[in-house]
Length: 126
Image (cartoon, rainbow, N blue to C red):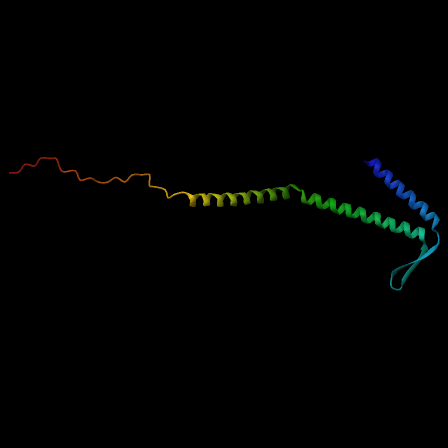
């Protein structure tokens, strides 16, 4: 892949060099109102290409930095924690809905009823 990239860049630079050799006439660049510069078209083209390359490099560095920040271990842990918390809420809601669907529970401990057993002692009546 690196050879393909090198070949593309080499062909582009060769075409740029040939184009600049053919275009040596002076041209005027208007930077801001009242400020203008006269330079050969070749120089202007090389400067524009150089600035474009620098901006492309800065953009690639910026996106790489963003990827590194987003993929930091702390970020991954925070995402995982949020996923688990949402699952907990989901499971709690599911348990509550299942509890509402169940019939009321019966008291499993039986109540002891007191029975009045007649006194079996014989009483001595005099």
